[in-house]
Amino acid sequence: MRGENFEIRAIGRVESTLTEMGEAPKQGDEGAPDAWIEFEPDVLDALRGIEAGDELVLLTWFDRADREALTTHPRGDTSRPEAGVFATRSPHRPNPIGLHRVHVLSIEGDRMKVNNLEALDGTPVIDVKPVLRADVAER
Amino acid sequence: MRGENFEIRAIGRVESTLTEMGEAPKQGDEGAPDAWIEFEPDVLDALRGIEAGDELVLLTWFDRADREALTTHPRGDTSRPEAGVFATRSPHRPNPIGLHRVHVLSIEGDRMKVNNLEALDGTPVIDVKPVLRADVAER
Image 1 (cartoon, rainbow over the protein chains, first blue to last red):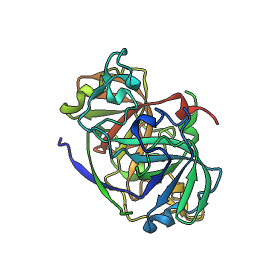
Image 2: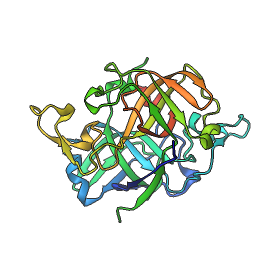
Image 3: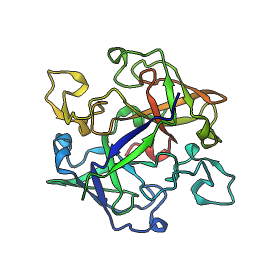
Image 4: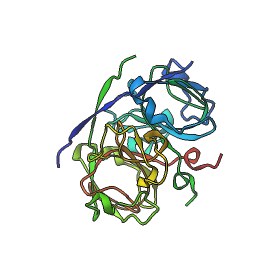
């Protein structure tokens, strides 16, 4: 087994008032602002059927993350014991992918406005998915 | 704005009895089997703190997907109108990332057994995250 590599591409980018890592809330439900996503022209067909009011999972690429980090203090709290980054939602991890559950507020051409997005201005967006019942069901 | 590229690496790989695309259920809660994840030796520290019983989101890379697909018939049903792939959970999409909510059944060295994983044998794993309350809350 090898640690094979794959190439991902930015399909869009976040436009947000959040510009500094220190300001970003740890999670979207902790007071993150509304933000715009501007999509690349060649993926607009892939948005067909998405409407205001829909609930989506946005996947982003934390391009300012430390990819060498394997352990961290949960929520940056040094009084808590270190945990493996896969046991946390830290942006610092081998593949710095962010998972954001948002509502679509509006769609205008190649731009989509969403609520509660805890991603910095300029963050690349790499995928968009609808929320499924199985994602949100209590088990 | 450019369609910038980033490199991701496989942090592990799925070992499953599912070997053919046709056999794979559309979603994990539709009868997907238990499966093992074998992790790369250099990321094992990142698993620290994860235990049997934990609920995780696994991110996989559908390495057999069609990355040129922008629209699809939802759930492969040609009687339904085509939708943009971002409005569906089709594996065929510009960045073919899979999102799988699973429970950890056991951990043995560099291997983790999980339930309900609708990914083919050999599928690369690219990230592991804990499920948050905000991911599953009804809104």
